[in-house]
Structures are given as structure tokens and as C-alpha cells.
Length: 267
Image (cartoon, rainbow, N blue to C red; front, side, top):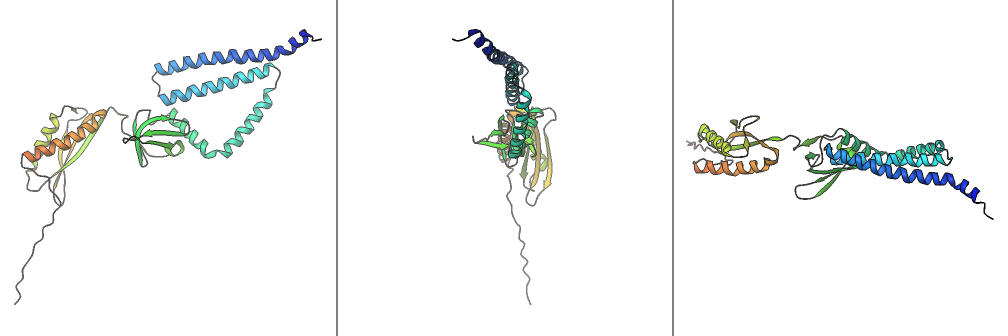
């Protein structure tokens, strides 16, 4: 005959463990939702927000499980020691991957770029889609996906093209030596100033003779625009300046070599 009182007494710790896990899980779900909303309101980078949410979620669930095991009399000291030994073994076996994880954490904590930025690193460049613990994913302008290990990325030279709101457009135009350089500069300057996307701040457009090349006089232009308008301004100026120069009889020279032949009469 079953002794229900004994069964009940024996099952109490296990019920307590189940209750702790269930209640803890629902509390964690609520806290994680609150954390996610707070991060969204603070406009935290998407990749960093995802990392923080995952880290908090995993950490709290581990604490709940350890608390539940302790409630039924299981010593968590031995479990923690075993986990520590396992972590050390995994760290030795996956030292390269852990380097990528460390790089990912550093990129998320002190980022030199954020999701949506356009960056160049090594021989690759593109828009940052996300920063995971192991890799950073870029989308190139021709819609290719590039994954770069964080361990490589954290030690690389990174150029961020979109971090600042304004960007300078530098273009060099070449004219022949026969051209009136001042007239060419005036035409180029007027063309730049007429462009609606060119800004007067932080500096007004600059047009100056930069170099006397072998076959041309090189005129450098520097003008500012919003970062999002960079390529529009660049291509527009490349096309419109050439049209203006040609309309005013100023051609773009090509490399040429003058050969002088001396005819020496022999006696």
C-alpha cells in the first residue's frame, strides 16, 4: 500500500525545483522583454543590443537552474568546478574561435562602426549588416555577402565612410598647357557652386592648380556634401564639369610626346 504522505514528502523538493525553474523562466522572459525595449528606446546598435539580450538571457537561466538544483539538495560547488574545467578544456581546444569571440565583444563594447555603416577593411568593403560573436557580416555594393572573422577585424585598419554626416568630394580635372588656367578654375568653381547638393560648410568649395604634369595642368577641387549624397555629387561633377569645359573650348588632354628631329647636313 502506497504511503502518500511519504511520496508527497519525497516529491516536495522536485516540485520546488520545477516551480523555481518555471517561475524563474517567466520572470526572465519578462526582464528580457523590458531590456530589449529599453535598448530600442536608447537607440543602441542592433548588434550590441542582440548580444546584451542573449548574454543576460543565458546568464539568468544558468542562475535559475543552479538555484533549482540547490533547492533539492544538490551541491552546486561540484557542478561549478566541473563547468570550470570544461570551460578551460574548450578554451584550449577553441583558442582561435575564442579570439574571434573576444574581438566581437570588443567591437560591440567600443565599436569603430555600427550596423548600417559603410566600411572598408583589408580588401573588402560594404555595409555592415551585423556583428556576431565570431564574424562581422558585410553586404558589398554588388550585393555579395562577406563574413570577416572578428579576430582579424579587431587588428585591421578600418575605414568608416559613413560615421560622419558630411564628406568631402575630391576630384582632379586636367587641362592643356595652352588653356587659361584661371578661366578653367572659374568655370569649374561656378559649376560646383550651382550643384544643389554641394554644401558651403564646413568649408566653401576649393578649386586650385595642384600639379603641372607632363601633358596637363591638374586642377584639384574639394567640395563638401552630405555623406548620403557623396556618389551623386561625385558623378554629377565628373559629367557636368567636362561638359562645361568642352562648351568653352577647353579640352581634356591626353598623354603626348613631342619629338624634335634635327637634320644635320653632313659634308
